Length: 266
Image (cartoon, rainbow, N blue to C red; front, side, top):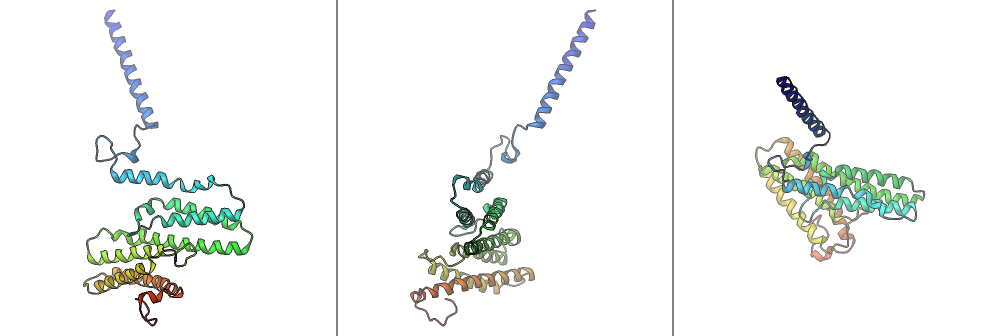
C-alpha cells in the first residue's frame, strides 16, 4: 500500500514539473527575454557594441522626424507644404558632414526619408495657387536629386569604400565628393551665398578632383568597369562644380581669386 502511494506521489511530481517547463517554454516563445537587435552576439552578457548602440540611438531619433509636424499648427495648406519641404531638405543635409558623407546614417534612415518624401508630395499636391505650387515643386525636385545621388553612392558604389586598392579608394573619393558638393546649394538648388567660405571650398574641390584624376590615370590593370565608374563620377562632379562656379561669377566674386575670366575653372 505504501509503495503504491509513493509511486503515485512521484507520478504527480513528474507531471507538475513537466507542466512548469511547458508553461515557461510557452511564455518564452511569446515574449523573449531579450531583444535580439540590441544583444551583442559576441558577448555572453549581452552588452551592445558601440556600433549597435549608435545605430539604435540614431534609429530611435530618426523615427521621430515625421512626427515633428504634429507640434505645429499651420495657418493654411501653403504653410504646411513649405514646412514639409524645409524639413525634408534639412533632413537630407544632415547626412553631409564637413569632411564626408555619412552613408551609414543615410542607409539606416532610408525608409524615414521615403516617408518624408511621400508626405511632402501630398502636401504640395493639395495647393491651389500655381505660383506657390511651382516654387515648392522645384524645391521638392532638388531634394529628390539629392536623395538619388546619396542613394546611388550607398547602393551602387559604396561597397568599394573598404578596399585597400588604389583605384577603388580613388573612386570612393570622387563618389563622396559628388555628395558633399550638394551641401553648397540652398533649398532652391542655387549656390548658398550665405556661406562665406564657398569660393575656397570650390577651389579646393577642383584641385582634389584634378589630383585624383591624374593619379587614377597613372594606374595600370584597372578593370574596365571601375574605369567607367570613375569617369562617370568625375564627369558628374565637374558638371556640378561648373554650375556652382557659374553662380560665383554671376555674383561678382570671381575677381577675388585674381584669375582671368577666360578660364573655365580654377
